Image (cartoon, rainbow, N blue to C red; front, side, top):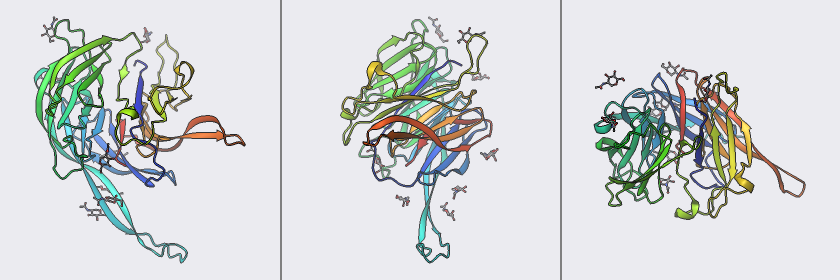
Length: 384
Ligand SMILES: *[C@@H]1O[C@H](CO)[C@@H](O)[C@H](O)[C@H]1NC(C)=O
Ligand SMILES: *[C@@H]1O[C@H](CO)[C@@H](O)[C@H](O)[C@H]1NC(C)=O
Ligand SMILES: *[C@@H]1O[C@H](CO)[C@@H](O)[C@H](O)[C@H]1NC(C)=O
Ligand SMILES: *[C@@H]1O[C@H](CO)[C@@H](O)[C@H](O)[C@H]1NC(C)=O
Ligand SMILES: *[C@@H]1O[C@H](CO)[C@@H](O)[C@H](O)[C@H]1NC(C)=O
Ligand SMILES: *[C@@H]1O[C@H](CO)[C@@H](O)[C@H](O)[C@H]1NC(C)=O
Ligand SMILES: *[C@@H]1O[C@H](CO)[C@@H](O)[C@H](O)[C@H]1NC(C)=O
Ligand SMILES: *[C@@H]1O[C@H](CO)[C@@H](O)[C@H](O)[C@H]1NC(C)=O
């Protein structure tokens, strides 16, 4: 497998106060078709599976809608996009230890967040019978985009959603249960030089859709109508990448272009996959590289844009190495891998000198849960 960089920018800004227990989901890259709910306690560092759920198919990529009330899944095993509803069950649990010094057994709320399968929409039109490695909900319009993987001859689809009027969508029209395929297109019908699409991203206005064509060595830009229909109205262009310049793209969420930001993102977390070796190239582990960002412009800081630090991840056979920065603090990220199958928590750690100046910055894995079902794990999404 090719060495690829998977880039992800922490989506939200460091908050000083955050919940202690965070909920997240992870999908399986390969069969069996399972989805797991996980809970992570950032004080005790306990990371555990809270639900083992049957999925419509294994999901190479899962994504929340803007209000985090639905999850969409793309699959390499089934030519369809699945739609799940997020179900939150708060229950009271009496935590009495009988110790007079504690809170005397006051009820604490236990939050269990699970997914319920709602619908599977078959790939159609230009994408009939084609599988996909990525799915991207539009944050403002009731549309979900996906594109074919593997290649050749890439195609994409826009699916409509049925937004729940009571769901929190931040005043936008995005989100909801999947309804139907409303538009499909091929990338390059003239020369068939397009390959397979491995990542999609929208610009902050939601009017340009970018496709990372990993097998066609290109990045494509399509124009999305600003009229709220989410309809793709044309191809803006394609750029062919030099070898090695390919990969999965995710938005670069620059803070200066987002409303409500109180400070720029500090870090860009990136990973490179491991390589098992093939006689020509030596085996090597995967890596996490963290880049320091300029809070104002979002640009990578430092001379020659070198990473702030780079640390090896643990396995040689790791083909996923997918990183998901936490939404509650830029100092944390979840990373998955396949092979052994696990989810890890990484934390940025700093050492300071006696004057309090930071001398070194690195990251360390502080928690891990193994999910050795044979198909885990693809990507993690954070609920809270
Ligand atoms: C969460 O809910 C699911 C589905 O009802 C259940 O199977 C699971 O045991 C629950 N987990 C916890 C920790 O309560
Ligand atoms: C919520 O969780 C509690 C405790 O696990 C369980 O008894 C109850 O049946 C659940 N409610 C729903 C609607 O799933
Ligand atoms: C569940 O409990 C959490 C934490 O107390 C709270 O933020 C959330 O609003 C509750 N959700 C529901 C659906 O009751
Ligand atoms: C869809 O693809 C599968 C696997 O390549 C193939 O077996 C099947 O015949 C195809 N079905 C159609 C309708 O093209
Ligand atoms: C949208 O609203 C939800 C629920 O109120 C909130 O958790 C989330 O942070 C909001 N997202 C944005 C981008 O403002
Ligand atoms: C491109 O691929 C499609 C589908 O495989 C085929 O129908 C078409 O003839 C091809 N076009 C060229 C120019 O090769
Ligand atoms: C090993 O992989 C590299 C990169 O894909 C390729 O160029 C090389 O030919 C491969 N070597 C063998 C022996 O397969
Ligand atoms: C989840 O459940 C399935 C079906 O029972 C089982 O095969 C799998 O091993 C379970 N996963 C874990 C991590 O226990």
